[in-house]
Image (cartoon, rainbow, N blue to C red; front, side, top):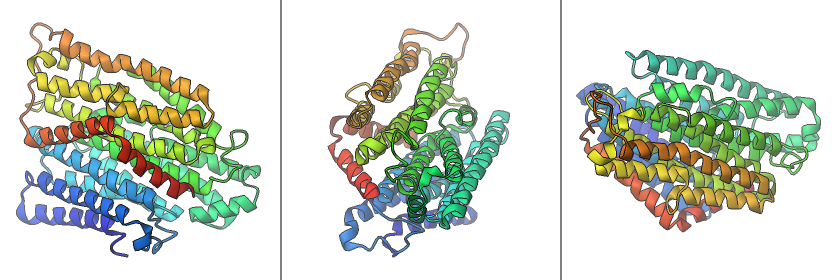
Length: 490
C-alpha cells in the first residue's frame, strides 16, 4: 500500500519538512532548491509506480475512495513535474520582488497534493477533500502579495467564485446520492444505469450542477470570469501554477467524474447525453476567449485568456468522448503535457524579463527586448509559437493529435472550428513578437532589464527541452497517454 501511495506520501512529507526547515533554520532562500528536489523526486516516484503496472502491484487497496490506475499515475508524474518547474521559477522571483516567505513553497506542495487526489478520486467525498486542498492553497497563493490591492482583489474574487462553484458541485453530488444511494463514482454509474439515467429530471439537474462546478475549475466560459483577475493579480509563479498544475487537476477531475459516473452509452450519446453541452461550452470558450485575448494590453492578462482558450480546446476533446472513447481522452492527456511545459515556459520568461521589483507584464514593457536580449526573446518566441501550435513544437502535435481524435469521432465541424480558432489565436501570440523585435520603447520610458537567476534559467531550459522533445519525438508520451486513457475507459 505504501508503494502505490508513495507519490502522495513523498509530497506530503516534503511539505511538512519544508515547514520544519523554515521554523528551525530561518533559511528561506534555499527552500526553492529543497522544494524542487523533493518535487522532482515525487515526479520520479510517480513514474516508477506507473511503470510497475498492475501485474506487480495491487492498485486496488484503497478503492473505491482512491483509484490508483494508469490514469491517476499519469497525473502523479505530470502534476509534480509542473510544480517543480514552478518552484524553480519562484526561487528567483520571490527574492527579486522581496517576497521571501517559506509558506509559498508549502502552499505549492499542498495545492499540488490536492490536484493529485483529484486525479485519483473515486468517491465524491474524496473528490471534495482534494478539491478543497487544491483550492485553499490556490486562493492563498493568488493573494500572496498582501501589499498589492490587485493581488488581494484577485484572491478574493477567486475565493468567492470558487466557493460558489464548489457548492454547486457538492449540491449536484448530493442530488445524485439521493437518487442512487451511492457516493462513489462506480456506484453512481451503476445506480444511474438501472434508474434510467437522464430520464429523471433530478439527474439532469444534478448533471448540470456538476458540469457547472467542473467548468469553473477549468475556467470554461461562462465560468471563466475569475481567471483574468486572479492570474494578473497573483505573483507570476502562482499564475504559472494555476495555469498548468491546477488546470490539469481540474481536467483530471472532470474526466474522472464524467467518464466514470456518466460514461454509459445513453449519457455519452450525442442525441441525449452530456457531450453536446460540453461541445457548446468548448466552442464558446475558444471563440470568446480568442476575441478577448486579442484586445488585451497586458501580456500576462493575454496569457490568462490564452489559458481559457486552451481549456476550450481540451473540452472539444472531451465532447468527442462519446464517439472516440479512449482516443479522445488520450488526446486531452497529451495536450495537457504540451500545454503545461509551454505555458510555464512563457510565464517564466515574463518572470525573467522583470527585475528590481517591477514585473514586465505589458506589451510596452517588452518593446525591443528581443534585440537587446536575444536569448530572452528567442525563448519567449519559442514558447509562444508552441502555444500557437506552430510546428515542430510540442503545441503543434498537441493540437494535431486533438483534431485527429475529433475527426476519428466523426465530428468534422468541431475539428474545423478548432483549427480556425487556432489560426485566430496566432494574432495575439505574434503580436508579442512584433513588440519584441519591431518596436522600441517610447522616449523616456523605462526599458525592461532581465533579472539574473540561475533557478529561473534552469526552469526555462528544462521547459524548452521538453517543448522541443515533445515536438520532435512525441511517440513515448503519446503511448503513455493512450495507455492511461484505455485504463480509464475500460
